[in-house]
Image (cartoon, rainbow, N blue to C red; front, side):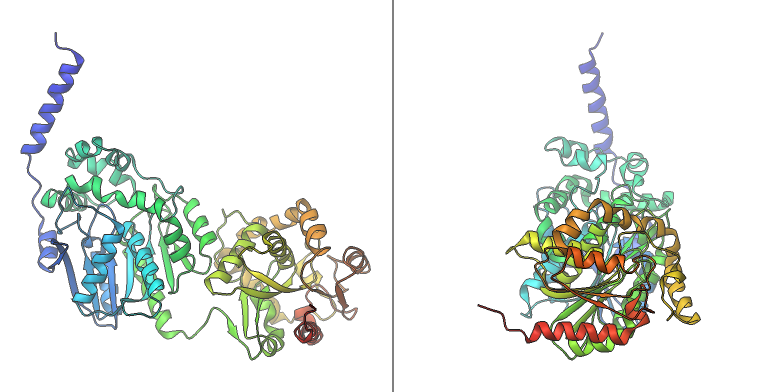
Length: 577
């Protein structure tokens, strides 16, 4: 009777013979038509397939696909691209699609970036937008790194990047089993020789979709992989996963976090490789300044295939916004230096509108930010809202805007975020990081909020003002996140020693407190007495008894003038030797 080993050898031999004798599937009419639209470019002696199509818009876009697919991924969003751009360039990277696929080639993200730059030069393209997916996102980040390094020198100019689902963050994305097998030396090469259609359709590749492709779609994806024996190259092309780990600092912190060009992320949350809420939370933490669009919960790893309409329209809106908008991420003033304005709960950056004239006279840059979960920022219900996370966002935003030092003007919850920023500033000592110049706090308390209408003094907002406050809260279903946002109240109690005793009491920077006494959250005389007790060295301005919790809204004139006087005093003082 044959042994188990002998049976296994026979089965493996039969499977090998079947697979080796089983030819790669023919190209469908759809794929044949796509192939006929393209041309061949020679890169390092390899044939690289690309399509260069004309559109009715302006400018150029390069479309960079992911693993294990090819340029055909973009066919469903081509109508949107053709209305936007004059040229749409779609490339199959070496080892993919209709490009050459040698098994022994040294596949690399860096080499793929060379392909894009060299192809652009051969096509006389000097500037381009980038639309990318999966591995193509990583190639894009390498292109951005090079663009930053050139700093005005001759080379491909990048105008914007739109990224779709990708494992951008090492340790927070989860390659499928088949990918992990392909990455195992020797075993990966053996496994690549047994890439059967049914295993492909039902296995790892199918798992990444939320809304599944049709049977015919799977046939096309599979045929493109098998074309030119591409299955043999799969272990090699997967080298990009290791490169992501090795170059995290260059690509995530260097290119994504501090991108010199506008960024849009379109994300399908039903993605087993980059699951929700892990991916969107990490993206918001690393790059809060960039726009993130989360698609329907049934959309997975391939937004451009599963939901081409929303993906296409989102991209059109993004590009049109860049072309038509003259808005900046900050307001310019006629003074010197920078100020960050941090609002409170439950409102938004709009809180500062009445004192903007005072700020514009005093500073060169005024940065007003809506915290995550508030105003016009994204408001995910399952996000872990935290003072620490909001402080991260401010530091990351400052870095992305190349702001190395700033004054802080804060109110309510923003006061607490400001105190956390000061705590970090103290801890850094001489280390590199955001330098804080001064701190101005408006009514902020330890206790929880009262009813919104109750916290104002006698100078209450108008009916229209209340409508605006309410609309900002309800925008993007913000009412659903209010319980999560209020976590800062517990954090105040938990971190009293760090923020009150460690920062307010011993602040290394000048502090001004502007206080409205008709505030039921922080009543008088309890609040001013406690402030004088804890921090007698800091200046306290008490406004009229009719002014409540919102000094900047209820009495913008005295609030603004008090702040201007404070800042002018700091600027006029000469540092002692």
